[in-house]
Length: 501
Image 1 (cartoon, rainbow, N blue to C red):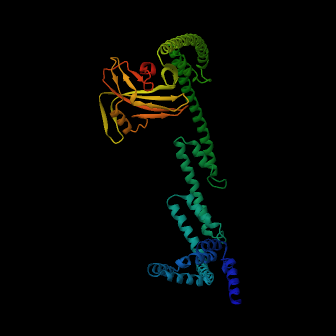
Image 2: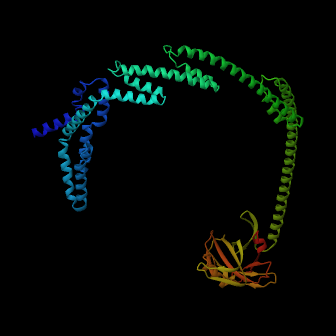
Image 3: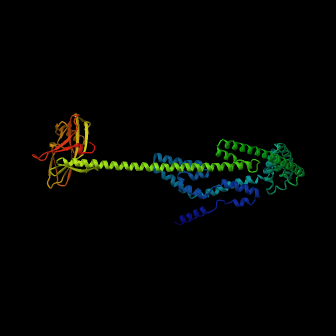
C-alpha cells in the first residue's frame, strides 16, 4: 500500500514538473543569438508530459501516447491489437487498456529522456552555427548587390551586425559602407529618371532618404531644390488648366440651363444651373436665372394646388350626391319591399289556414294544420338522385324535393303522414309522394326523407323531406296538407311558402 502511495506521489510531482529539464544548463554556454535559435527550435521540438500522460490515460488503448512520442511502430501495434480484438474476440480488448495504463506509469520519464535528447542535438547544431551565419549573410548580400538590389543587401547585413560579436567584423562594416554608397548613387539616378517623367514628388521623396553623412547628400539637396521649383511650376500650370476647364464646364451648364428654360422645362434647367461653380464667371447669371425659374415653378405649383383643390371639392360634391342618391334608392327599395311584404301578408291572411311568419329573415306563408305549423325550408329540382354507392335514380319528368320544418304547437303528440301530403300543379293534377324518389334520397344519405308516419312531441319541431315526381311542364305548384281523416285539407302555394321558388 505504501509503494502505491509513493508511486502516485511521484507521478503527481512529475505531472506538475516543468518540461525544460536540462535546458538551462545547455544555454549557459551559448551567446545571445545561439540562445534565441536554441529556444525557438526546442519550443517546436520538445514534448509535453501532461499531454503525453493524458493521451495515455484516455486514448492509450489506441497507441496515441506512442504516436505522440514518435514511436509509430509500437503505436501501430496498439491499433492493430484493438482491431483484431474487435474482429475476433471482444474480451481481448481489455489487454491494450491494461498495457496502456501500465505504460502511463513511465510515460513522463520517457518524455523527459526524449526532451533531453532533443535538447542536446539542437544545442550541438546551434553552437556550430555562428560562423556560417555571417558567411551566409555576406553571400546573400553579395547576390542582392549583383542585381543592384542594394537595399536588400544592406538589410541582410544589418540583421547580422546587431548580433553580439558581429559589430567588430570588418567585412560586414566595409560592405555596409560600399552598398550604402552604391544605393545613394542609385537613388540619385532613379530620382532624375522620375523627374524626367514628371514625377517630382516621388523623386523628392526618394532623395530625402539620403543621410546627411553621405557623400551624395549635397548633390541630393541641389536636386531637391531643382525638382521643388519644377513641381511648383507644374502645379501652377495644372491649376490654370483646371481653372479654364472649370470655366468651360460652367458655361456649358449655363447654356444648357438657358435652353431648357426657354422650352419650359424648368426643373431640368434648375438642375443644370445649380451645377455652375460659385467661383466662375457664369455663376452670377446662373443665380439670376435660378431665382427666376424658382419663382415661376412656385407660381405653377400654387396654380396646380388650387386646381387640385377645386377638383377635390367637386369630387366630394359628386360623392355626396351619389351617397344621397344611394340612400334615396335604398329608402325607396325598403319602402317597396315593405309594401310587397304587406301585400304578401295580406294575401296570406286571405287564404284559409295560412299564417305569415318570418323564416330566415323573409316573410313567407306557413300552413297551420291541427295546431302544427308546416314551414317550407328548401325546395330542390332534380332529374337524377345519386346514391352514396355510385348508383342513381332518374325521374321520367323531374323530382321536386321539398324539405319541411313541422312544429307541434299543441299539447298532444301529433302524427304526420308524409304519404298523405300531395302536390297540385297549374292543371289541378294531384301528385302523391314518390316512394322511388324517397328511396333514392335515403340511399343518398339524407336521413330526413320520410315514407309513412312520423311523430312530433308537443313544443318540438322536426325536419322531414318529401319527394314528388312531376312533369317538366308543371308550374304554380301547391302543397295540399290534410287535416286528420275527415278534416279539410290546407293548400300552401309554394310561391308564398318560400322566397326563392
